Length: 437
Image (cartoon, rainbow, N blue to C red; front, side, top):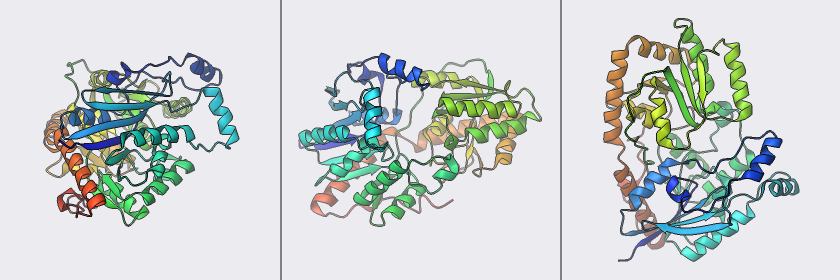
């Protein structure tokens, strides 16, 4: 059987691959980081679970030969390669030693060129000779920059987000110009794009009117069986990274309004948070008189442990701003946590067959607070929504169907690129299915 040879260029980690990798403990680097007042770096945390879930599906596809090229922090050597269950892994060390990287930054005035990363990725691809490369994450320049070196091989770009979103500065307060410029360069170079929602599709076409956009979803993280535990919090806010764009400041402001009626309201914030940003949040919390109402938990290295922890809350408050439909939203729905979120270009889709989540317009703190009060004062209604939400997700987001669609997208791209065959209409992104809400 002639197998389709596929390369994923992405960034992920899980316990299975870490058990194969020869990793350092980053002792010297973390010692230096501590002296300089920087956060400790970890090499033992799960990262990008949607990649892991997609791998599990592709392991079953006997007509595909999957190669994954990924950076991994803490490698003792520059590269390490192995295979598991028929999938080939090609890892590279994405960073120079800590102090050497600072010297290189000075030499290049802080602008990163990632010359070593590009060399290693280019060497992997030359050895693999793939039929197609799938870049997952243009917003991560330490590996996405390598697509600029790929010639005569089709590149399919999966949009985890679109960094060149004009709303980014307003909604996050931070734009890194080198990331912006690189993504724009990649969007203009490549032709094939997988989009999970209307916003991403429209932004890609704005950058490249000749782009061909495909419908795609990322696999969802089905929670392991979680135990029923006593409730300690009313609401939980959780994310891999606690940031402005995830809506944490809006969640805090809404909580302050709810506290006027329910003085003992409790919010649990779960996820990695930059040291300086956490200091800012704590000052905001103190100013609003919420010190006794909000607690923080750091990022859980094992994803299933995080799922168990957030079940200590009655409801989920996830006012994401830039995501179409974030993975945390899906996870909350699967865990049957009644959910409040913002109306993005994707979240109204969750209510297409009837209400499953409560929505507020982005930035509407009053409506966030009103929705929180609705759940607090109508627990039976909240629980009925959560059951509908779980059923909707289980019916709508099936990981096997998602993976099969992606494999079909690859086939369509390969046939179009090499043989000029038309792309089947059913593979393309449909603005009828995903209207502007």
